[in-house]
Length: 584
Image 1 (cartoon, rainbow, N blue to C red):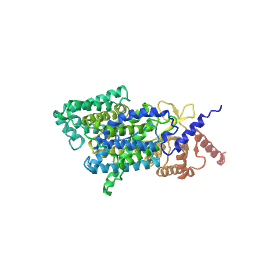
Image 2 (image 1 turned 90 degrees about the horizontal axis):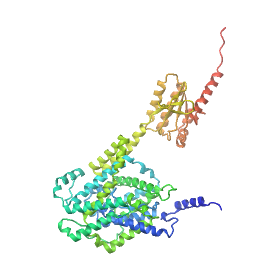
Image 3 (image 1 turned 90 degrees about the vertical axis):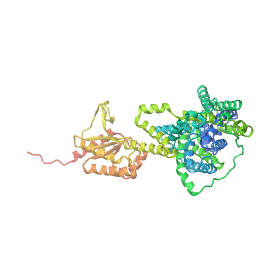
Image 4 (image 1 turned 45 degrees about the vertical axis):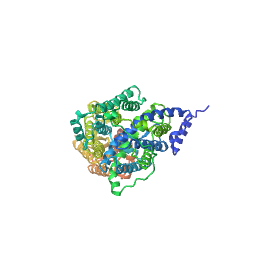
């Protein structure tokens, strides 16, 4: 019998690409439903305390967090690609937009909520455009050190913002460090009951996570704290609780704000969108729907983008992919986005019939949940590794974290993004021309090294450049080539550019390269290019006229081929020279 598995796999991959909505249900089987239901139940147990705590972190009522989870889960199930990704309120982006919105309106006020909904629409539209126009590369703009510093700074923000609730103290105003200083002067007034509740919930979650990540430690901690408040009458001892939670269904409305307010949200929406793209790309790449297929990051941007649009239309705030919740769905055997939809149903059934149970949850318990989130997002191991292996990049971590902690968080994140881009530009400008030598006894040309004995060809310089040739480094490239020519102890007849690392050539670099080739020709130096493998660079050479300038047969597949071919040309030229009269 013929093996048709390859054809069927190809057909399944094609079907996934063609599937317009609910892509995770492609090839779904009825027996998967029990797996999704169990995963959804576990996800709901984790999402209930997390969504309430995240909403509280942003200055919103707990129900708003559930609405964000509803919008993110439903929209991503319909328009996303990843089978496991959980989308909803997320503690990574909440401090960012909450800090930006607090500069425009009082936290928790109707105007604040209206601005949050408008921001969600703007962020959603940006993500939708990024997905449609396949701008997934934007997710790679933040380097790992900058992302690590960003998360460390966000962690400190969450920690300081939750300290008042856990200590039972009034929340001070002002910058983060000033708030921390004020809290430090009032530590003697700490309420021991709120402190015990906050640390108890934190310890419960940490222990549950250590035993098995699928154990809903946050839900267990909140339940235990609520029972303690009820039985011990802790409200009379200064322990505040959530109180009545509205169960009114969300209503659709387009948030209408003035043009001035819209302009003030623009920079914030761009920053939040970039952070969401980075986290969504990292999540979907970490939890692949199919190990044999690359992740469709752009399609997942569409799913999260539509989630934010829907969230804004029902009066909530921007949503994001959650790596921890996505990991729970994957680890508990979820097979599709039905797991997320099941969690939504479970949560709203709880709201409809058991909202009174949530009203007794102490605010300190939610603070304990967020303290655990703050501790979890700090990548201590990665910080230590970067400090040991690349101190310069460790400074990026420190600078990014410091900017986010000291400055208004929106500005701090913007500085972090700018630092990442500047570091990338600086890395590109560091590229320098390397002189190559032939490895002894071979035809291999390699950068000069004390560890590898090499030899040079008389009257020939072989130079390599291991970076895209662009306006950032073109003038350094020309200077290094001219320096190598001047430093040669012999008259140079040929220079061969080993171009393996040149994957792109822009307009400025092409003009600089053309001028360099003309100068070499004027000085009687032949110029050849070897191993230009990049199709884009080859197209640029033809488009900018460099191929014509080099002349015929000046592009070779190896350095040795270039040297041999041009040596034969030189010998042929010498043989054709007229012989003068011999002296008697």
